[in-house]
Image 1 (tube, each protein chain N blue to C red):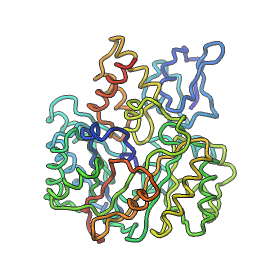
Image 2: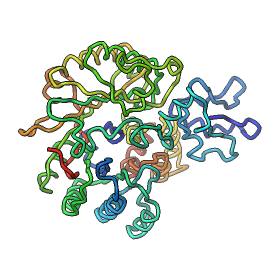
Image 3: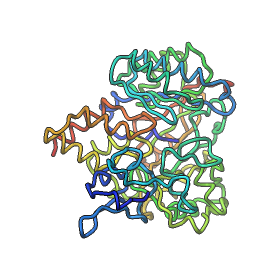
Image 4: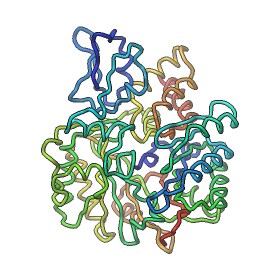
Length: 241
Length: 212
């Protein structure tokens, strides 16, 4: 985002719209966009809060690697090669027709920066490299975050992306059920070693007895599961049992 | 796409907030547009309070008939639509209607797990897969400390609602310069997916204003 200071009247209405507090006032009370902190979500522009048309959305015209911010932050952006708008994939939502998570496999999504804290790619790399060292993690290839890696096997990102700040990005991968506890221990370590937050999603196919594999491990490890969940109710066709 | 999963709130409060999504996959997306439209019609019949696609969102602000007209002209999605509801009974009936419509597109119900499981039993379907939220990890000091504010901002899964905006609107409500309803609609329109529940948002905004 760019602010046209010839039009801006420093009213500050855009300041409150910014979810990552990147629009600020300087020592002379003038409003400006902190370009390092701006994640290019464009909500200040989309909300039409500026009555003077002083906010300019660069969006698709942004150069690489800054464009990574736009792709991972703006709801109007679609990352080429992903399943559609959004920052991840359909994961379990279409599992009844894709069979992406069969029994014995648990899906994990670590959404860095959410809610509203924002994340630098270097924080995500810190996590992806540590997880990759386990030797059995494969990051989801259709996820835009994986596409920004130079080497998904080691969880290494392209150098030029590391200093880019995004509203949120999902590190998405599957683990064999028997390795889930080990992975959760690594995730605990990561949580203590990053400069932002992540919201943690765990999904699994329901077994014949009605249970899901993630619940027992969470209970054993003393991890609180939120009471609300997202449930695929099996109405898709062709149905994969 | 985990945007309806991490809605924060107490168990009691979440009994008033439900989201139902219908998503096509490459295997069943061709020809799915009328099915997405049918989903919207059934959602409105069952008292949804908001509807969204991948590009636009609509909120129930007048009659159901007008809502239907708005949505008929506004929806051209072939991949995903979602609707938000206030009551468990409406979602349960909607799920029965979706089962009967048998459109063959994946449906996801986002809400209190035990209650959704019961709805499935009533509708004659069952969970295929479950996605759980294990909560927020890492630097807790970086997120809003006021739980009602956190509940509001996590209703937008893309984090487009800012804490500062919520607090400023709460100040205006307290000062009598706007109403909780108007403020809720202002916030809801910042969420392009239409999954912010405006009624819940209104209640939460009033609660934040009352504490100022």
